[in-house]
Length: 246
Image (cartoon, rainbow, N blue to C red):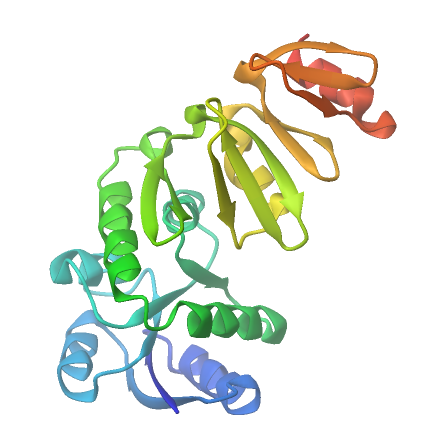
């Protein structure tokens, strides 16, 4: 049984999430709750949770403030938040999980599955946490870096270094211009939403390209500067041509 701590200043939100976990937790049980950062610190000191569902904005300090203060932490974190663009981007780029309020049962189940898959990889968790703190320190989202993994190593990769992304079921393959590849558990749709501000364009249901890495667009394909051809779907051709400007 995994031990969960709920941190949210709204009792109704905590009650709702507790109920969802009772129904869909599948081995995750709520052991304690906190309504602010001070109470959360106390609970962390006494209850040793495996996973913390952490609200971002609360009176007296944010969930981010708590993690900055800790530096590294032994538990998994799933942020629960209303939509805030920069906060969501910092979380996404750092390969951490979040749930938008009101939390949906299927999204909770997916987050719990990812938590269980990550559990036990301590060295990877510390690297992800360090990169998250680094992303939080950026003045704006243009300074964010993606946290990507290969084998048992973790890398910080700027969006400008990525040439294209390819869907592989519910996973995504991300390629740098030098051909090196990373595999992420996030979907291509997730990366489309994340990387659009950096000039990434969806050219096919299974492909996303970096506009800055495109050399030309001919005969149903875009050709990257590396010489690689990527198919453009017929229905996306005109829109992609306008967005890519080639």
